[in-house]
Amino acid sequence: MTLKVESPYSGELVCAVPFDDAASIERKLARAALAQGIWRARPVAERVRVVATALEYFRTHAAEVARDITLQMGKPIAQSRNELAGLFERAEAMLALAEEALAPDVLPDKPGFLRRIEHVPLGVVFDLAAWNYPLLIPINVVVPALLSGNAVLLKHSALTPLCGVHFERAFAALEPQGLFANLVVTHEGAARIVADERVAHVAFTGSVAGGRAVQRAAAGRFIEVGLELGGKDPAYVAADADLDLAVPNIVDGACYNAGQSCCAIERVYVHATVHAEFLERAQALLAEYRTGDPLDEGTTMGPLAQRKAIPFLEDQVQDAVRRGARLLAGGTGTDGRFFAPTLLDGCPNDSEVMQAESFGPLLPVLAVGSDEEALAHMNDSRFGLTASIWTEDEERAERMAAGLETGTVFMNRCDYLDPALPWTGVKDSGKGVTLSRYGFQHLTRRKSIHLRVSRKA
Image 1 (cartoon, one colour):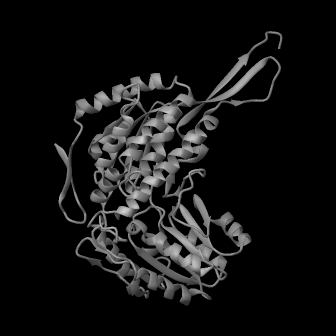
Image 2: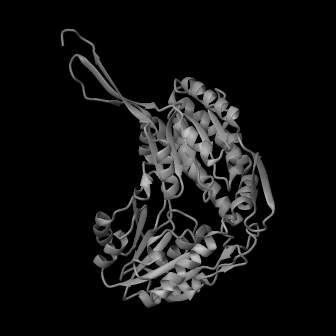
Image 3: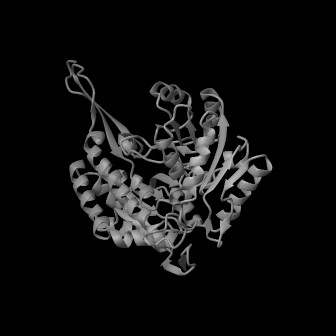
């Protein structure tokens, strides 16, 4: 039984990867549990050195890895190369943080006692990674999990299994053998692994429905499940915004990777005083996108990874137009592969395009009359991953940030993960933390050491 992947651009077969059968899954689980018992005893500094060495694979095979990303899910080749740069930015940040973040917390002196809090590994971590950023999403878990002393089993998306193969080539040589393994399994097979008592933590990136399925599979087990789910990330363009900065960044935030990002800009609230100019500038920028062969260096927007996304996006556009929105650009799929960069104005805040995750190059806009109106609309969502405020007034940004129900608040930037900051969501955007020193806490447990060192105390 094999998993076959076809190019979303050409329809040609990219690869056929064999599924792991029951015996293979059992072997990888058993080896991971055994290897973790050895690995956890290694000093953190040694883990850092070994993991850093393994990451060199991605440097020496950069061209092959980037090409495989593009062939499998359609990302323009320049963006695939950018993803490799992002992998190293995040991995190197976690390597630099590891020793301090994992060092025991030593409590103040108490006569007759030694007290400290250790951060000990969980065991075997099962990482279910998504296809839209097939390097960045797994690296958020794989590197800190290994540095924390865990073993890792990676199940990549069915759309991007070759990226799982590349991770295996990079990390499978780690000693002891079995510390890292790549799995190709069905959803049912993944659910059985989640339920296996040897798995101590599950990290999932994907849809809200997928997150619920993972949570159900872990039901009854007292383990943490990290869930990075959907987003409907808002931007607010205030009256004093620098439009030279705001418009190109917001348009790029909506259309980069064809909008297939959980933290893409998916709805924009623009102060009425700059509304008309924002639309004019955005429309001009959207017209500059060039769709085509994603291996062509001149292509700036590739095909959608899944063709079923096209009618979904068209339905969102039509719903908005029926409810009074103006379609200013795009709005339809082309060639059964691409979706035209789309600009909509006057979208009611309860319309589908303002409430349901699009995961495509849509830029729906609504004019607002005040910061307070914008804040109310931004919070009127079941999602809470990121939000951006475009203003020259830091006090305004701080005031709105205090009221925003979201994991990350940006001022004058968007669609970016700073690895020194925790990546987390609220509401239906999920739970748990990756990156930053707090990402290590999510992959370890606290162990209290409480020693009476003098009977006279």
